[in-house]
Each structure stands twice: as structure tokens, then as C-alpha cells.
Image (cartoon, rainbow, N blue to C red; front, side):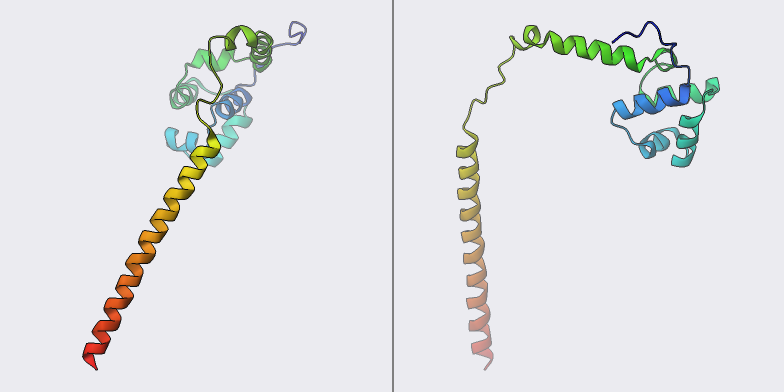
Length: 140
């Protein structure tokens, strides 16, 4: 991906929106952290220019710096991630991603445990019914 021919995006609102999305944060959450409404966050993300005080509050709420917002480049990040994925075999050789247990065995254990719990619950309910029947018989 050639990013040298394109001018950098200076739209701060779009950058804030993209960073927020990448952090998995909703507009409502950002609004709560900033003490403003969700509609205000939406309007801010549509603005190309954002004043310094608001930018500082956004950066604090997102847990990043103002400079990180100003310098954010979506295309450069994607390029970096793609290059990391091309070298994934170098990263993965230090990790064991194989399961150390049989998931079906764990599932069957959970089913057996559920059966035991159900049987205990059923037994307790039967005892309650028997007790209530004895109490009703005594009242007659």
C-alpha cells in the first residue's frame, strides 16, 4: 500500500472517531467519560477542527495524548499491521496455540455436573412436596 502520494488526513473529528472505534469504545462511553452528551460527541467527530481544550479532554478520555490524535494515520497503521501479519510465522514460533485438553471431555464433564445438580434439585423439590403433603394430611 503506497501512502506517500496521499496527503495526511487533518480532519481531527474523523481521527477521534476512528481511534475510538479501534479502542472498541462507543460514542456513549466517550461522552460519559467526558461529561457530555452522545450527540455532542457525534457532532465533534464531524468537525474538522477541534479546539485545544476539547482535544485535551478527548485525549484524556481515550487514554492517549493530543499528539497521538493529531498524528494518527489510519493507512500507516493498516500498512504496519499488514507487514506484521506477513511476518506472523516469526512471531508465532514462540507460542503454543494447541489446546492442552480435549474440549469434548470438558463439555461432557460439564454435562455430567449439570445432571448431578439437576438430580439434587429434583430430590429437594420432591422432599418439599412430601413435607407439604404430610402437613396437609395433619390439618385434615
